[in-house]
Length: 126
Image (cartoon, rainbow, N blue to C red; front, side, top):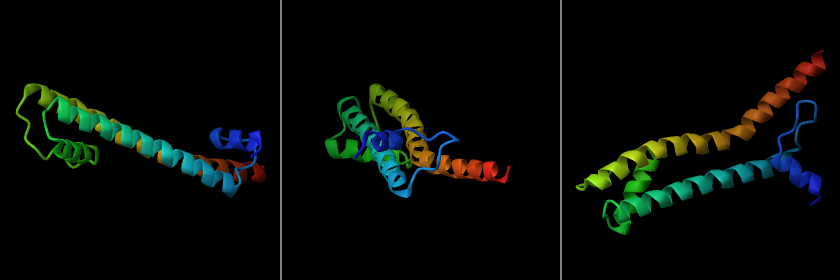
């Protein structure tokens, strides 16, 4: 793949440039999906290790609690240590921001394409 095409997948086109072809747009979507998946995987890993080592939960309970918090459902196990409760508090705040960040990463290519197309249509009418 030529260098220009690779560059166009990672760089959003300017309003004066033509809209990205469908094939390259799908590559951009794949890149953003992998980025969001990486953010979720990293966040889940932070939660699992924190719940295991700080809160003292077993690996499977740590995974369950981290996944439930990251998914917005809430904790499953009752925490008894103060450090575990502090970790759970900060992880819950972080998980909310991580969820919003991953959502924004997934929505960004669609929003840009819609806005770019609307701007091109506006320029054509002038």
